[in-house]
Image 1 (cartoon, rainbow, N blue to C red):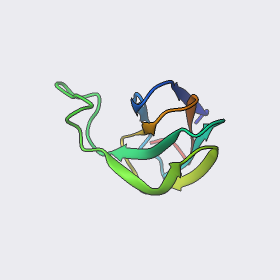
Image 2: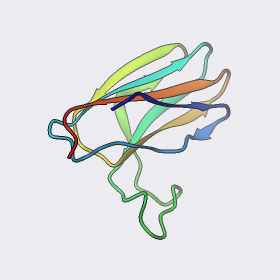
Image 3: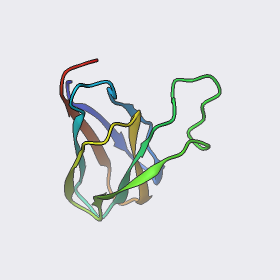
Amino acid sequence: MRPTSLTATATGATDPIIVDRFSGNFSAGIYLTSTGATQATLQITGDNILGTGFTATTANWISVTGIATTGGNNYGHLTTPCIAVRANVTSYATPLTLTVIQDGTGG
């Protein structure tokens, strides 16, 4: 999978990035990067975000322990399949970029 990135410019949750949960050996590198004191956590969901009636505010988003930033850069690795990931920015100082690079064979 090609790297997929998006940038947050305020507090709140970013749009979700869909991952391939059918990958033979699910593996995704997650990067949270910021040049300032922006704080954010990575969240995942197993909800069908493309389903009829889906809303991000009522979805079951789970914060991933160990993949967060309190300023600067952080990297994490997901091995549990999920439908999508997003960054939840709790304190904003400078733009935060969320990048996902997924490995494995497509399903």
